[in-house]
Image 1 (cartoon, helix red, strand yellow):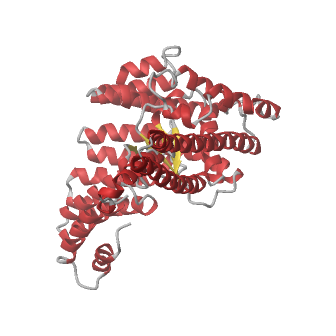
Image 2: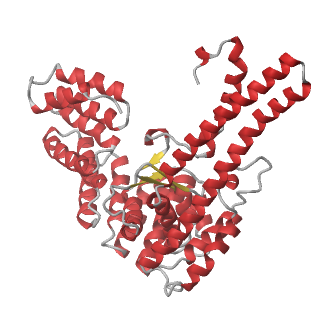
Length: 460
């Protein structure tokens, strides 16, 4: 709505349209297209785990070649959602799911939304609702105006009621539509789980988790309650189909359970420290996951030597676990022991079957911290290799710029900074640094042309 169009004679219509349309994005759970407005978490271990969870489900849904990305969100809420071609998973969904199958059930549900193209269909519903809102607003305002001219109080009241009622009706319509889509995604999830030989029991259990979290106990109107069917209703709707599957009693492989528990421990340590770790693993305080969380919490509390001792014991128990080596490298890096950290990251990369770009970049980042000019060419090589497979790694661009700075190549340092801003969505800053880089680069050279691309390509 453009306020400049609202003269005195049409002010009521504009206000009615504004009041009615303002609620629509909220009901559709609209969210910004860019990840930069969310507290994103990057972690190679957890990303690899969820990637393994998602891959077979995407294949079952016919989406394995769709370029869908999984993004971790730093939030304690038990939630996941889709936006564009991305599945956003809250860290709270990891800690609150006790088994891989539970989190896999959540992911299957979100993939059901993607396969059903529910986002696009919801946008169509919103556009339709906006049209209805405008018509209702114009009609209601017309009745109010007619009542004012004729002196009819009843006519004015009818018009006011229409203005108020149209917004409520549109809300109910959109919410009802969205609840229907949630039910469709639940049924699709059961299908994907069955196709991949997995149980639907975990998905059913997540509805119990929702109840335990008292998501619907607030005195104010809860948007989740309005836009989703009640958990017990969702559970009842798919329970028979889930139990009919020959895989219903199948349990998760022990190695996958271990990885899931380790991921929960890491999230707990970073989000709540030692207290959170002990609370999460109160029933099994000497489990591998509990010890992992304890080691991480010790490191975060500032005890480098204690954390390294605990990580060494973990590595001895699981010498082929890449993430124990990575955590050891992180502790060493923060302690200023860059050369040792690089060796630990290198060992982690060798053990990592997921070929994480984050790990490759971490090797180079550790070498940069040594400040040794002789190491900078290797550092640049590792960081660029990491960025090739993971171009959204903002930290890597910072270290790449530092590495070029150590070599005296200020033009490439500023170009790396421009790249970092560009991938972070800060397009204005990216263009500024690209222009600065061009002044120091040889005209027509590959890096000069790369800077020119940043300057000339429209921001999106």
